[in-house]
Image (cartoon, rainbow, N blue to C red; front, side, top):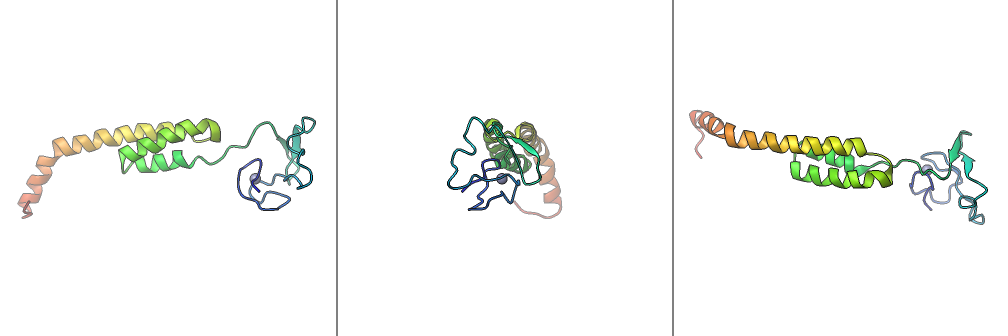
Length: 132
Ligand SMILES: [Zn+2]
């Protein structure tokens, strides 16, 4: 069984061990879907609005941002997926946008290094005795 709030696997636990939300009893399927129970409390007594799913970790955005520093193409792909998924996950939108910007910046930086710095780097390597 998966937690209604954070989406993590919680087995048959009565309370979610990750977010503390009460889980529906097996025989009470209407607990979370009933129109008369729009609010509930988690294990700490805090009120939860059942109509608003809790934000989930957007792994695509995080992966996209990390990858953008090393591989602009992969960083851009993961960041774009993260941006699309950010509405569904309710998280990772800003991280995805930063990832897209960093991907483009890394691509431009790599292009500049390759096109303009390469002759100098080759010259340094030649003078150091490196044979191409
Ligand atoms: Zn949970």
